[in-house]
Length: 285
Image 1 (cartoon, rainbow, N blue to C red):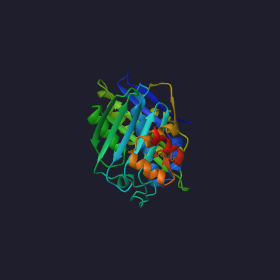
Image 2 (image 1 turned 135 degrees about the vertical axis):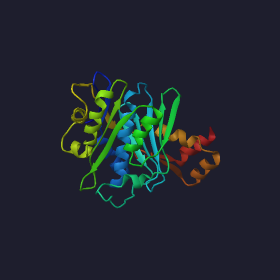
Image 3 (image 1 turned 90 degrees about the vertical axis):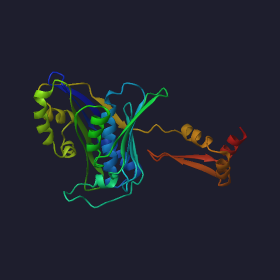
């Protein structure tokens, strides 16, 4: 089961959130038939979205868009309540591994662009903020976002492990934030966090999100109730129909001449078919 869990420590002067997003990342990879590089980028983006949405109390959604000019194109992830989904422009892209043997996510995403967060409250209101990319590795970019857009000093790690079969084996993320009054403990936390290498490997070996939190926070650690997460798309045939009906009449006429239309969801790749007769009925109304 995928989930997110919050924690506090040091008399409430440290707050932390950890996510386990393995099943969601694997589902996104399968939906897009993504190569390992794209799967890793989507998994990291979904963990980032889940972390950012942890305190989003409305019934809306949070969207992360990462666009750095790299060969993967734009990487997007969305968290709406307990539901996660993700997309990437070019899921087929493959690049050589980095010198340290890791997937070249930063190179695939690129560095010439932005990390954007959009929050929608479900009532037609939205808030949007963006920061310049640091590396395209997503974790470092999320850390800058927290500092510049939310003015909170944070340590961030997101990771995805792809197995030898090319499929996602583990995915997750962790953020620790220093609040006023944490000065006496923050140095020790920073040291423990720097030793938190291979986060995704630890998840693959059976450690839980709670284990990650306990490994970086000073004792005692107060854990909140975990919140379930799962990959699920909110697309529908009616939503796809609304998109088609909003097209100019010239475009609808072209689709009628072609014998019908197909709308494919960018997030889950579900196809929705619309017949020539349906399109003609819309033109009459």
